Image (cartoon, rainbow, N blue to C red; front, side):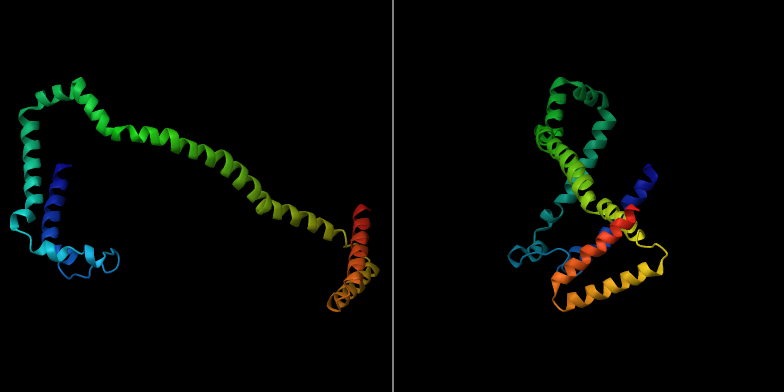
Length: 200
């Protein structure tokens, strides 16, 4: 693993050095509107004229951190192991690692309640309940019932089809002539005929 990481680290050094002006150079439009910065917060022009020792602070701290890590873990590994096993270090590490235990409070008081509410109420009652009943399942049930009801009209007798044609013509004329009384009566008769045929 060390060899490919070493290659990648060198490539990142050279790539960052060569392409620095394209990414964060003064006046570059590489990001365009992807990162919006208000004019009063635009500090790239100030950053160009900082003293050299401030610009090199990230590099200095990187070298110091890498060197100190190498020195400590190569010379004082036993001492670091004893420090890590001490109760004081474990207490401090646990305190900061758990983010001052805010995550525990956040998970137990908010996240668990939200998950329970989402699963028990929204998913089971709303999504798998009302929405499914009013949506796919309900539409499927209505279409199935309607298709069985329509199927009852197909008897194979021409006189029945003639009656249906006359009723449809009467419905259409009464509907477009704003005579809803005849339309309603005709619709009731039509449904009663279909219902009687369905029962037979």
